[in-house]
Length: 70
Image (tube, rainbow, N blue to C red; front, side, top):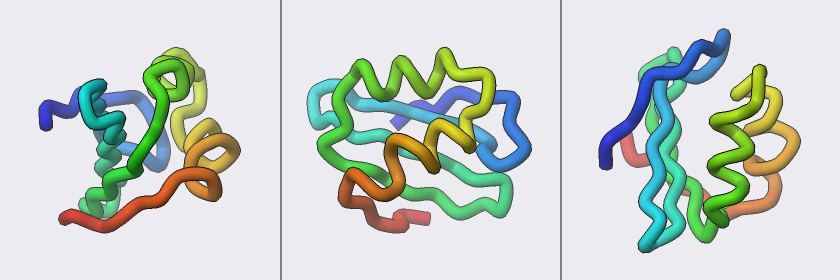
């Protein structure tokens, strides 16, 4: 999945596959997580947010299943 670099104190890059509704997040630590069943509007909201990490904590982490993939 292609990820795009983002300006964040917590997140390095973000990618999204609309066919599978999978959000992929690479943290500055190098860890990569995939969040599943994430609607496209949530991904777009994260990308439009001035704070990617805050958006992730408020709207994604506790709401969608995930797994560490890297």
